[in-house]
Length: 341
Image (cartoon, rainbow, N blue to C red; front, side):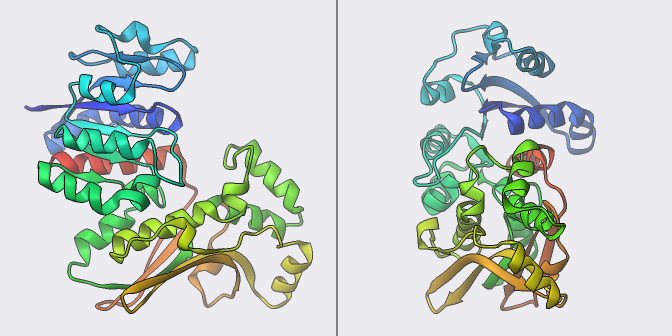
């Protein structure tokens, strides 16, 4: 049975969740799919890195992180501190790229993925930046090297948004995409409906790790903008970056506006949309009041939803309830399986 070697570049919450999932699903992958995976390289931002061509003990790696110990002790050879050199030295057939990334230009993930593809490695990522800033170039490069560039976890975590359209709606032309794609703002608005202030709802989201210390990426609509950009770029075939999205956040939604919506039988949602206009696409992110006739009305807390309309089918709606690093990790695993099977 062939063994596929993996390199994990980034070993934060998502990378660790992926490692745990790989351990839990090892028997199923082997017995039902004939797939055996071995991690030969792991790189972290602050807790060291390790390379072992014979395979790193994933449980030992997880224990190191839990005990705040460096991964270096698991390495059987020097692990280059430079990420590009690390990729080359990993001895892997697949790179799972999950490092911190800039939404402005997709770096350094863009360079990491490009290096892996050039080396003949499949590349799988949960980073949105490389999709909106390099989708076509990276996909073309992957094709030229006979490998895959996959990114299911970039939008709605493990929910198969991209795969659904790629595999089940062949030859369909997507005309419109709409939905609630930022779980943090949906949680904030849901808690405000229960009487919390905006600041208190943001503080709660921060306390459970859903919102960052600086919540502006969520509440000002940037995360939603990059997600709708990724969907438009891939599913509509029109390159779109976040700065091209008309964007308004939720800072102006206060208790009074929440009450007005409730009186009208509606709810506030941070709605993303992208619509084909001739050869271009117009995309928007902004708060909207939605009523019970909309599928978006029903989603609460960290649940997200997307509706995709094409020229061959009516609206297709996908809902993901309460995402977590575990669901993101499953998206990575699904991409990994699709890349190598």
